[in-house]
Image (cartoon, rainbow, N blue to C red; front, side, top):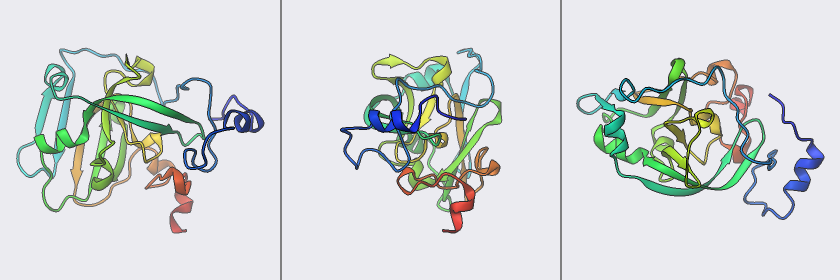
Length: 208
């Protein structure tokens, strides 16, 4: 996908932004662009569930929307970096810390990675350490407003220190893995780690 903004316009909008706020190759857009693969799914609170499964230390967990809604909330201020080169700064994300789910259903000792699952079988992989980051949230609100359907309502993962495709919209759970397994975009040529500060966009860069 290409940006509707030119490189020159992007540079103008980035003026005055400290160098340590904008990763290489990124620009600041107007608003928060909507990008996703496939249609926007419907949502039925009565039928929706969230699952933690795979190599858990005990039993798998399956939660209803009411149970997820009752979990403790927190707020994180963090930027949002999309691999398509836009960055939205100073977001106030509200949601449920990944640490809360790690406590509800701890991983087995051999777990090193997590595969996050979303609607339509979409998935994104990351290390357990990245998933457990203090800023990682399953988000329900941004800047005090409930997420729109196009932006991932009712629940999307945000892992601010990675490119945004690692945080799927319409998240439905995650799987503990004893070894890495590529997700949807990683299988289609995107970088396995996705650090925006190292501009890790594509899989051909993984040997560098």
